[in-house]
Every structure is written in structure tokens, then in C-alpha cells.
Amino acid sequence: MLRRMVINVLVIAAAVWVAAALVPAIEVNGGFFTYLGVALVFGLVNAILGPILHLLALPLTVLTLGLFALVVNGALLAITAGISGDSLNVDGAIGTILGAVVISVVTAVLGRVLSPVERDA
Image (cartoon, rainbow, N blue to C red; front, side, top):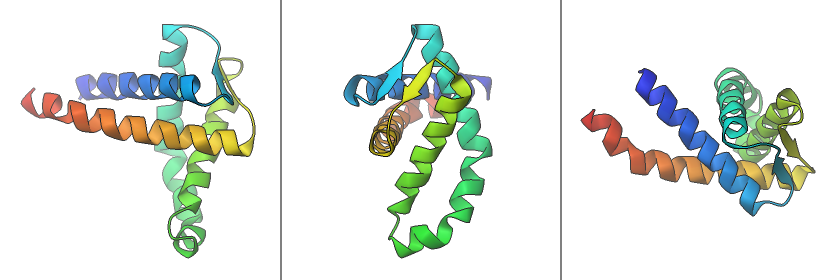
């Protein structure tokens, strides 16, 4: 279980790094350990607030055929930026949503690639 949590934090840290590299509106101030800290905060925000916000936004998500889920994920990224202080800066709604999309895609791809490692262990 601890191994899976460490892998998840590393995957989220890599996803935040890719998002910071691709999306000009996202800036991470610091090095490797800053990315790990941001990933840990982002994982906690997603685990605690994510289900609540997705449930509250469910009617809008259904009406928009799932597109409003992108807005909710962007809000979770903005909350993470607010909690992280100066470590993570996100500018604008479009940048926040685009960054959340990049983080989601990279996390899904890396999770899929690394899932055989978890099953074998």
C-alpha cells in the first residue's frame, strides 16, 4: 500500500512537471522536492474535496455531457495552488483548466504504464 502511494505521488509530480512545461499559465517555483510537495497537496485535495465537488457539480456535468468536470478539475488545481502558497502559481481560468487536463492525461497514461508494475509486486 505504501509503495502504491509513493508511486502515485511520483506520477502526480511528473504530471505537474509536464503541465508546468507545456502550459505557460502554470509555474512551479522550486526543484524536485517542491514538485513532490505540490503532488502530495494535489493528491490530498483530490482525495478530500474532489468527490464532494464532483457530486455537487453532477447536474451541470450531466447537462454539459461531462465538460463541466474539466472546470471542477481546474478548480481543484486552483485550490491546490492556493494551499501551496508560492510553490505553485496558476494564472487564469483557461490556464487552470488546461493545466488540469494535462495533469489528468499524463496521470492516466503513466498510471496505465505503471499498473503492470503494481500487479506484479
